[in-house]
Length: 458
Image (cartoon, rainbow, N blue to C red):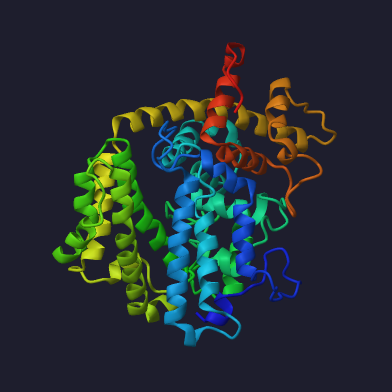
């Protein structure tokens, strides 16, 4: 792969426009702004990161997590840029790499549904048990496409199709940022559980891969953009550190337990130096903040070291694992990431209160999807009837009304498609997955008749 193509400033949906170098901001800085000021990004403030509906305001949401990942990603991109500055095309600076990675990091979780990963599992579980009621004569590929809810693919659909300019390029981000966003540059047609594009975005994925010169691995599958590895690393670093901090805040783990993990990659003299900056022992937020900085710096330097070590294989599109795997088995930075993830799996993700709330989310999605998918099928039947004689049921009309301008209509048919059962189901999934935790809970209660109990609208 060549940086001249990989760093394309061409915008999706504006391919015929000539990219210019604005005086105020670069095209990649504009990508950052477009994402931050989007309504989809705003909603992340009320979406679960790890702990659903946490009453403690110090616990991370999807938005605070995304902002922190973006800061780490920006530093990673810029640091790599300075290391490979002689390889960058004319007019591209290390700061541009920082902005590209920052933008992709800001959007990396934008497609996640309410209640975090539990929400993804709840949607998939519901379709597995109920999909046959709605799928009718859909093809095998279309059924699979709907049954496996994938946050990465939903995010790609949002930023390229549904956010801001419906079916006209979405946020119209640069090809460089879109390529960097793609953690799994493959479609849902393959056997893999994780993928980056639904069937509706398959042509867009292919266009981006061609424009950027990504290496073709097989039909409908390409290699990652080199900078996508930095997005993954930034996410892993923040998960490793921030999940542990939240666990202290929620009294799932003690400060001493978390400190042991966070200090593990440092030599004893460095640990002593870091501890000397602490405040009172009871001030765990202050002490975690003073511990966090050195850990971030250590992990950022390790990420760049790994990227340079694997540079040739990355540029050939051959790296199929995380950058940290390129570090030696005896490297404490690699061991730290593994230890932090292991502690999260055993103690944090299985916290009883978290599990109880996640189980409740299944009931919420069951109520929402029952109503919205029935409305989608009714809408498809209405559009299929020659003269519209298949009228929408009263409930379906009102359910679809909640979608506002995004409800399927004669005016917003996807280009080159019709409002089929598949397309209508895809639109209601867009809406349900875009809900915040609060709004999903509220609408589910409304559908169950709780409006009469005076439940306040979010």
